[in-house]
Structures are given as C-alpha cells and as structure tokens.
Length: 452
Image (cartoon, rainbow, N blue to C red; front, side, top):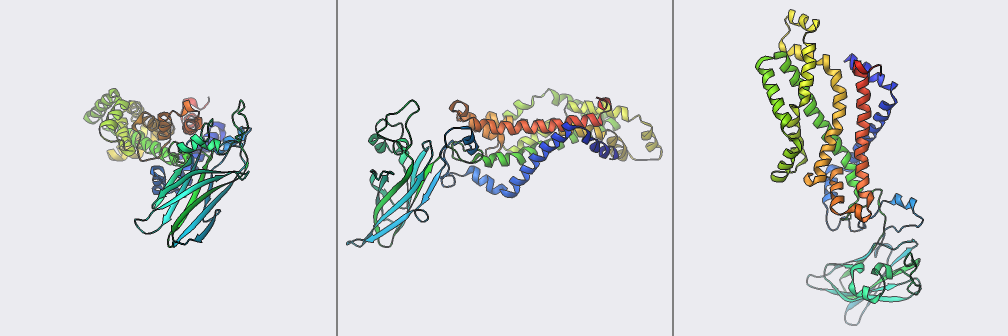
C-alpha cells in the first residue's frame, strides 16, 4: 500500500499524468452532473419519448455555437402560445356560439429561413362536437394570405404549414412554404437564393366554437440551430445522450476492468500458488478463451438473444477473465513465489489463502494499477463498437448509439457533421485521458521505465 501511495505522489512530476487526471476528472464531473441533474428514469423517458415531448425542437438542427462561425444570424426556434404572448378576442354570435380570433405574433429578425412552421390547436368541449377553424398569415406589410379554411378539429390538431400542398401551390417558384411565407416575393432570386423579410409577423386563427368550449393555439417556428449539441432526426436534444453517455461509458469501462483484470489477477495468483490441477485447469481455460473470437460471439448473442448493455458486459467479463493477461501474471507470480519472505511466511505456519492475499498478490499489485487504467477505454470502445454496428442497447442513450443513428440517417452525407463528430470526440478524449494516466502510472510503477 505504501508503494502505491508513494507512486501516486510521484505522478506530480509528469505533465502527461496531470493532463490525464484533468481529462478523467472532467469526465467524472460530467457524469456526476448528468446523474444528479437528470436522473436515470428522466433520461430514459426523454430519450425514448415520442410525440409531445420534443414538439418544440427542430429536426436535425445544428448546435447553437455553430452560429459563431457563420456570417449570417441563423434562426432559432420561436414558440408563441395563445395564453401567453398571443391575443384572444371573443364575441357571442346570434346562434349561441362564440366567434374567436387568436392572434399569434412573432418578431423574425434572422438572416435565414426557418426549418418548419407548425400550428398546434387544442379544444375543450363536449364529447362528439367539432370545431372548424381558418388560419391566416399576415406579413409585416399587413398583407394577408389564407393558409387553410374550415379545417376540422375535435380534441387537438397539428397543422403542419410547411407540408401543406395547397400553400406550396399558392407560392409558385418557392422551394418550400416556410421560405415563401417569409421571403420577398417581388425580388428576383439571386445566386444565394431568396432574401428574408424581417419584421413582425402574425398568424390568425379564426373559428366559431360553442359557448362553453375553449380554443387554444400554439405556433412553433422551428429554427436551424438548437441546443448546445443540436438535435437528431427525431427532434431529440443530443445533449441528453452526450451527458448520459459519460456515466454509462465510465461504468461499462470500470466494471469491465474490475471484473476482467482484477479477476484475472486474483485467479492467476491462486493458480500459481496452488499449482497442480488448479493451475492446469486455469491454463487450459486460458488457452481455450484465447482462441475464441470475442466480437463474433457478441454479435451472435446480440442477434439471437439480447442486446442488453449489462448482458454484453457480463459476457465480455466472462470471456476476458481467462485472457492472455493470465499467462503474464502467472509469470510474475512464479518469480514472486520464490521470494524469501514467502518462505518465511510458510515457516511460521501461514495458510495458503493468507499467503496468496496477504503476501503474494500485494507484491505484484503495483503492476496491476497501470494495466487496470489502460484497459478501461478498451471496454468503452468495445461498447461503442457494438452500438455502431447495431448491437447497442436499444434503451440506453450512449455515445455509440448516437453514432449509429447518425450513420443510419446519412448524417455525414447530409452535412450534419456535429451528429457524428461530438460523440467521436468524447470517445477520443476518454481514450486519451486514460492513456496518458495509464502510461504515466506505468513509468512510476515499472522499475524498467522509471529512468525513461
């Protein structure tokens, strides 16, 4: 133990060790922030959520910090609700109903066009009744355009203006309705396309509803950038997966290193000390598992049984216990077994297990620490590899799963580089941090490298 403490104190002499500790500490800090700020159940709910949770997030939006590297000011998402920013006017009619007009104003001062424009309409009325409403678009120049007439709604309705073929036909020559509704229609398109008309726009929702009914509306003008990490094809904020990918990656790597490396170390010490049949069985198992291909076995289990992250981890540990490291540790223990203090322990009557755990294992333990640190990113990369090839856990938000989604949606071909680069950078930082720390520990605890 004293050797380990002195070795850890010597790490201050190595700048690479300090940088490695900073990177590992950053990952641990991010993991704690994710676990405390976003509990596991909430993270899983957000990542697996469907309609209703991410309605106000744009699809495939770049991170907000990318706006710093563009000349134009890219649009952000604008949300207008009838009960907050919108104005509601209601008048009774002769037939006992009410005429309602909801005005949803928004100020658009961006240089680019929005991704989509969607109107959400909700009602509160007696079961079986329905309401028909009309939507009018008003420009800063007070020009009005009717988008839809007598659209029916019972409980709720989602009017996707950007996908309305009628609006598209009413704006000939425009690539999309969201472009035509905010562009200068009198201007000829230049080499860079249409120009945005900045100013105050309004969306008017007009309807006649029963006297005891209520009508609310919500307008979402989706931007081109959103969040610190951007969004994916399901409108999910990628920050959820990037944050929670850190504790999952560290847990997978740490548990894998403990289960495989420590178990191999202990079993090698026991087999070396007892020798005979015990050592022979361990060596035959080691030779068997050394020829078994790990990745094909995991692929087979993932395809035919389960893709659970923890099942994969258990299988990896089982197949890694009797690995090539078993023979390396055995060679070390064979040399340590002949040490004088081991003979002294036998002379005063120490039991076999006491000799193994009190004298033999601690003798070689300092060598285990660098190998333990270096093997952690190996398990992290293995989990990411399984996820990228489609064998990741379908429930958990991991870095590999984000990369798999990006590949499946052709992110690199469509220019969504952030989707693939961000988790890849985090994986590289993880490997770089543990590599710096592990090799520094190796220089401290390995006598042959202390002078290097």
